[in-house]
Image 1: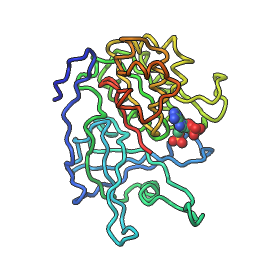
Image 2: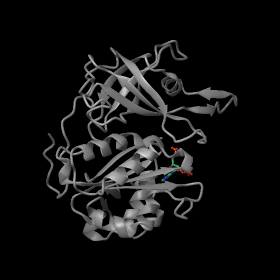
Image 3: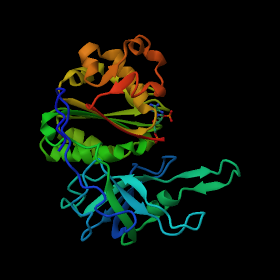
Image 4: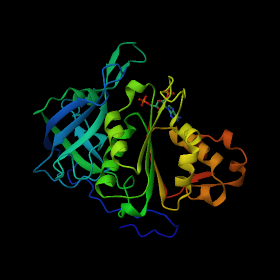
Length: 321
Ligand code: A2P
């Protein structure tokens, strides 16, 4: 167990199992279900929720929310080598989809593109393999991986603001379920960003949870069209502005943690917005900034992150290109 509790509110993260199944010796899981994560078929992208039964393998009971697992697609790459495993975030709670740690799940977006030189259709190997799997199919899996992007050991000691874009929602689906199952009483806020409202993932599930749990708030930020609340072209960090009255007290709480998951670059916008609305020790809970940086927040760029602008351990990040 981590022992760094020097700064108030620093989370103590649990020890987790890593590579219970090595990538070189994957085990067989069996697909339980494969469903669209969006409400209808109007979304331009295809994102699917795939559940895999790993019972009887070392993955069973050893996957903690916030971790990832590996999927090994069949076949060979262009160098005639077997495909390497691809990592996918767990979308399932720690107890699994079945409550017993036997069924893990992920949120997978089909990679569909054009070859940038030839202009021909390009289909991502692993994502399309996974999205095409049918219940009953066998799939080679390994892992789990990741020991930093976790919920704290004692979740009730904290409050939570989760920022997600796109499939970055995956770990938060499981985390919110874990926190509610643990009976956490503090505030839990999830802010989800997508291009269009039709891209919102697990939307009805989160709306339903918000109805049932007073301490859970679900906010959306749609970037390319007007939202139901009249706001248009919002990024997740803009919710810190539109909902400042609601979010500032939570941000100021010594118990609060911030989790960010999704598109690389989103953390910069969130950091900037935090630096604009929080002062002195309030901001230092999350970011340690050099004075010169604080004098010119609008011009922060990603190169400054972890140098002139350093996130503290109260800010947990998982961003990808
Ligand atoms: P946009 O693409 O309109 O600029 P998806 O993964 O489904 O494409 O969704 C990613 C979401 O994150 C989109 O709404 C996208 O907006 C938004 N986004 C892109 N860049 C940033 C950024 N730097 N900060 C916050 N949100 C971003």
